Length: 149
Length: 272
Image (cartoon, rainbow over all chains, first blue to last red; front, side, top):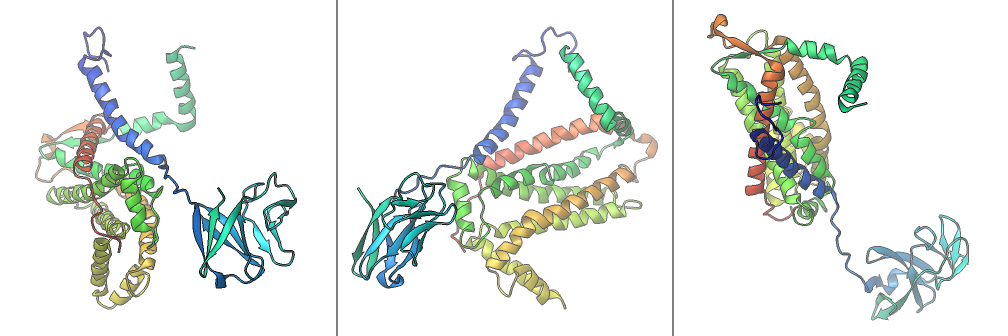
């Protein structure tokens, strides 16, 4: 739309240019918040060093269970009457969740048939490294898992 | 190829495939009567702008869907999350709530203008009835949306609302059970209201809107019966009225943005 008799119709101070600029700015003022809204906020994950994993009696001898350790799973195992072990339950190969196998007393990843021992060491399969080991303590009747320093 | 040539090339390519000339030709014949009450013609368009598929409610609704979680355990917290953690979350939710209210306002203005301008008469009865149905759908959207934050006030509002439905003769009890997804307002109600709010009602509304607009197009614009036909000028719908309607939308957007930014919706009461 060109106004008759105007040399420049795009100048900022020309009424039409001013209108165009204002319109663009007002559209941007709606679009910008919408775009920012779509970016998920980064929630600082409370760094967990210790979790309570339940009562001793919850876990039978020679069995394991997955517990939440911060935002990732951990595998708690009762390998003897009074002996507990815990490792990260995230397979170091492709991040599948591993499980305890009572028949072989080993840790098994179902995704690509990896085997670890109960200390997290790789026995067979594709994982490039061991599972992170955690310290397990028993406070009264409660099992507590903590990160190793 | 220069810019003008490229533009002509693209226009030609589209023309061959879409037959735009026929659409332009069709649009050029649509006219709008101009008289003392012409301003009331704008409100239907405003209702449309605030409500339809491509506009405010759907756009902000889709944005809210990115973070909202429709379960009793998570609904309130997810709305709280939107309000406090997500950037401009308060604004997006506020625009959605304000727009919901303004849609009802615009729809009522539209309805009364049709009523007082006698525009509902033969042959436009079906347009009127489909409009009433659309108003019902808008109200149902508002009612179902009100529960979704799952705070105390929305919980009790839904309890009162569904209690009213239970008073309907004969089918009342069945209706209330259907609305609640059970005997009481609870988790099932939230899930079912969520489904209605984001899928069923918008879907039906879209279909009915197409019908409504097709009926408006079919019958043409009504001129009030008390105006002598020879006194009424007319303007072209495209682009004359259309551009003016765009300006009305722009103004409505300005009002909406100002209200949402200056008087944002809160989330005062606790989780239900």
